[in-house]
Length: 577
Image (cartoon, rainbow, N blue to C red; front, side, top):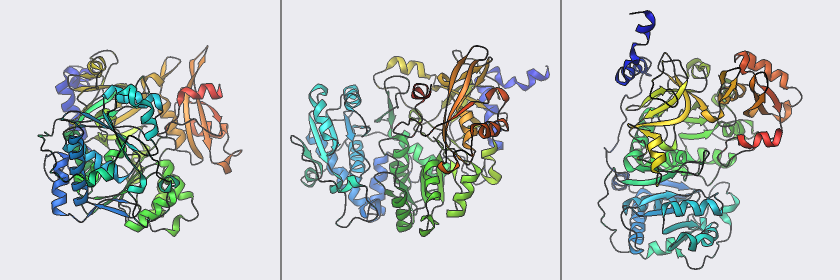
């Protein structure tokens, strides 16, 4: 056997491949991190977790919302009553119920009430336009919609064409205490909007005196339809079970982080969004912790809430951390209670300068939240344990660490079933216990994406010779420069390491001799304009990227952004062509 054959012998079968990769990952497994997820109350439906925590710690706050505390016992009781209301309105096991709410405690009541009734939770983006709302309601055939009063008029517009039978309405005022605490977003104090032909949520719950319906709900029953962002066509509903939720909460609370019932989680991410649902609803419920819920991001309100409630766990985007560090009043607040703070690098990228600044301000080390998708319920890889000497930031970008327990990755050739050797770039495939069961109403997309228990993501990735996972970007964004693959995400990650760069988006420009040329649109700190030039940034890139990856750099005032903080690549060429 030649050296080449011995080096790649693991490719002879998928079983050999996975055994080899798992052995590499076991060798770099961080000390102190469990090798199996911890289920604090066992493998039971999430609704059972709520009932048990309500029994063990009835008076403990499950949700804190600008000073208003909703205890575990109250959440259990109100969600029982909501399950009863759904039953009275004709909802039966398997029926879809749409929740068109921003961040508010009523979202929790509806979420758990829907699961208790055996129905399917359909979170709807509160930023949706009329066509988007109509599409999702029609796709799920939800006949009951719970809406915020400031959004309910949009439901009324589509009510007949979508066959909505019951509109249940609530407001921020229903969730606030008599004396709200902290800086309040203006929307929280807006007058209540009267919605005719609707049911008042909290008023209706007060009238529900009968015992909740007794529905046989199994842990593997369909529990939610979480819609993808629709970047490659119409959004698709990912079918998830309560076990998918439970597994995600378990790995978040024991592997990605260490979270117990003593912790206080602060969350401003939208809880209709998978990342917000995971952090703001599922993680606290699995661990028995308290969630400090914010209606939206506000740096001052965040700092106030951390200090007021001694928050210990937080997720944010890098931009949020930079905004806090840039505020002159940042040191007026005590943020030292924060222990676990994970970030996502969307526009600004985590770099040593940002990490050092945050550590000096709070005593806590920022680290990336690693990799996940709506299809997998997120949190499929973790990089905990690589932060000493910034080892995680020195890896090839985008470094995702290693898989959480019971989760596997493999790299395959696009369009075939051929496994690729470690170190080669190809299609990133993942298999995890929290994998979607299919795409709702889309058998062709299900058959294409789910193959023998694996999700073929369509994204480009690489597994290194040490077994670490690297996400290189979406295939449709990959550029070919003189026949060589160039990934915009890698260039964006490199630019993000420069302390003056506040955001970037990379697309391709057609070139007669090179095929394509990467073009980076970059925003910089206002005070550094004129100093941090395109030439300076190009030189910075040359220290970190191969010569064929060096982009043309155009410094711009703003970047077109999506509602969830990502750069709209399709608009860059139109705006700056």
